[in-house]
Length: 138
Image (tube, rainbow, N blue to C red):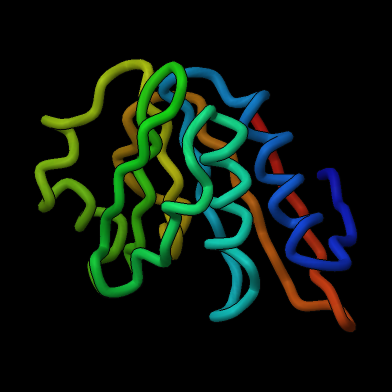
């Protein structure tokens, strides 16, 4: 499992952009980490790496779902803290997803009816003044 120390927000966003470029259309990232661990910061980089505007990215804590346009498709950013993994589908998400869209899910847990077989996991933890990221790609 790759790991990287991220000293600041810029490094966290850069990792998001790097991993976005390696994520195929239809790919899903499941994000783990405590509140304030950097999940939304990482997602800003991910959206930018997909050709979208990172400045539009906001925490989905209260909205549950945000959609961002990228160069090749959309990025769906979900927060399932209150809904659980199955709750994503109560939003009608399966009807809106297209094969070229990518999914970033906070508080997902490992179980869920994810739309493709390409499902990666990212864990962000505070470490000193920065964060430690560890991830597993299929």
